[in-house]
Image 1 (cartoon, rainbow, N blue to C red):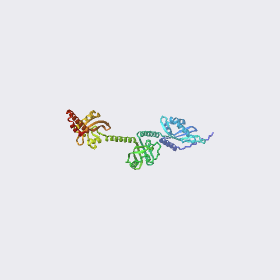
Image 2: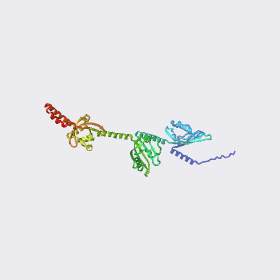
Image 3: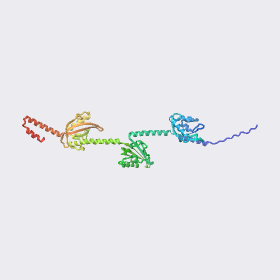
Image 4: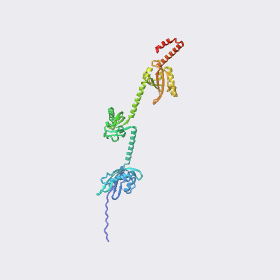
Length: 435
């Protein structure tokens, strides 16, 4: 029986361009670390791009993914929040499908993903399809974490050291101010506007404003003019704070100002301590200058360091004539030699017969060359500059004269007693000029 011939029809479509396009797309996704995905909600079919498989850690392994597999990759700490957010997105009027979360790859590595999707609804406002992209942002996230950690450490370091920092962008007029800078100014984070004027930034005391303004202006005009200046600011609570400001201008290669940046250090405690020290020194100087005794200090080599007004009166020298010279200039020859030997012995052995053990009588030498009877007490103190000796000196010339008179009177009285009172008139006459 004759049969009709079979006829086969075939259509051949050249898909080279499509294959090449897909290859280019895969390469682009791999380079950018972008993967694409698609979920057919009705048929529960999930499709991943080549890069999506790699992002989840499957390398070249391929299979038909499911929503259950996707959920197994959520990081335990992010899973509940991420699923709740995605559920909210699936409802009409929900938030945009744009979320960041962590996933755990097949090999256990943790990666950060940025996932953006689009939902397709049917006429009943039911989700029938979701598709989108996922981007591996692990490097960016880790960099952000490192940056936050560094900023936190910097904040702690600035708080401990009392340093604040600021930076003014000359192109945008934006100012970045560290938390410690705000603290120094008496402000809380967020209390300052993002684009304050430099004057508002500094809160400079009116008496210091011109100097500070001129200094910063010079830094804005030349990269060769970094500055360091001490000045006062008035905090928002009215308290005056002393600060040290240091800064510099930053310019491009054409000399155009890009920004000014600087630091501010709260030096109020240092200033107050320095003022207290000056006040203390002034008080001690007043006590020494008004002392009723001569006070001469020297180092452990016997070099005079200070010479008070009473010492000027006793020895006849001005301070500039003696300070920096040896103590032996205030002593006659024999005493000077003894003193030098005594100082050498004391510095070597640390043992002395007169230091810190009361006073003794010595002989001093006036500028005019005559000798002076003195009473001397020496004490010792240790300073950052080394050992210092303090000599308290009293001119006992009047006392010695009185003692001589008394001894003379006593001798006359003894003679009178031996003669039965016959020398009473003579004794009285002799004593009268000194009575």
